[in-house]
Length: 352
Image (cartoon, rainbow, N blue to C red; front, side, top):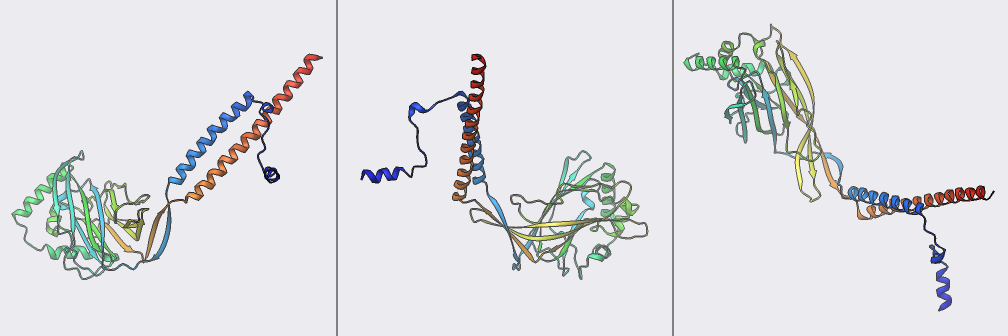
């Protein structure tokens, strides 16, 4: 039995010297303290790294059908009163979207940007559209607006014209915000003065260039937010001076699912955008507007939250702590030898 224990001791990779053979030095204490601080710092860093989640992206064909697309709008038009602005939306088939759950608010803003009134919109869309073509949407909407508002220029219209002109003189603007639910097909929504009859619009605006569609996009998204999402149009500011025209934002929507660690699935959408501005020419008859023309990608992106395994954490922890311990040990030996060599050289010089 004694021989077996003696043989087992031969496998000891950490032989220990006798207590009286060990020597403690000031340099060793300094190196030990530095090593402990480094190891504690690295431990905290590795623990945070282990507790932090990371995301994995996967792509597949989007098989969803029959769902609606939520459009979150929050925009300010500093040069147009709320009475003249309308929010219109049609899809690829030109279908009327009034049956969907839509809640859009218009806030009247004074020159200083303070809210002075509120208007709720429930019926936002233009009626009797026969189809949607992105290239000829200006003329199409203007023609529909004329059909929709063919009526006499009575007392109510005159009262509205006076009210709007007074608002424009006072520098009144409008903030449009809310959620617009549309079908999951290509389409567009736009904010313009198309809701006015041609006669009323001509009484309010002497020239087409007087329709200043300067705007600030505070938020434009196509679904709820998730960690790390970036909406490229948020914070966009487009201010026109002594001119006007039509802004067109061509949007490519990418359906997205975000899967949390708790297995909760958040359906939403990302998008990319290309901006195009068409300056107004005197020979044109279309009213300036801000268009958002969108199309959906057939590919859905799935983003999964994942956490690193505990074994991975232990492996990294052993690597960094063991490396720090070995490095401080080497540094301690080098410092001891350097100090010993300097001390011996000094002693010899004194003896001589």
